[in-house]
Length: 125
Image 1 (cartoon, rainbow, N blue to C red):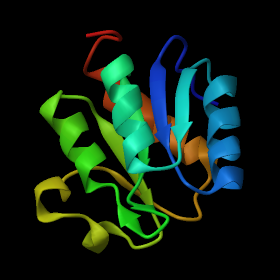
Image 2 (cartoon, rainbow, N blue to C red):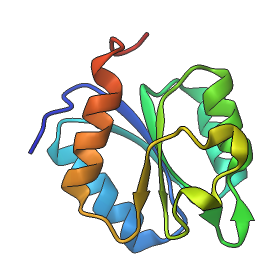
Image 3 (cartoon, rainbow, N blue to C red):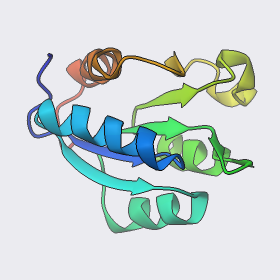
């Protein structure tokens, strides 16, 4: 599996089992995991408390859109991957260029996608 040693990754996911699987995959890849946050309020609070290198964002959190989290990440220039069962068509137009992983996905694909996103920017930038 690709290494993301030292990368600080925020997980925003409301399904506990999925969040645990993502966390395990990221820890195995050498990441420091922030969260997981299961709702928009918790995710925004974590973003105010710490600065991740990237994030994994479920767009549907218990029926609520996580677009405010995507907006906050974009405003800070932080890359993120959207993990969703709705595909790219479920993204707000302003975030249509963001990488999307269709659920269910292989955690190894997530690690590869994050690695690709972070190659162009130094950690902690």
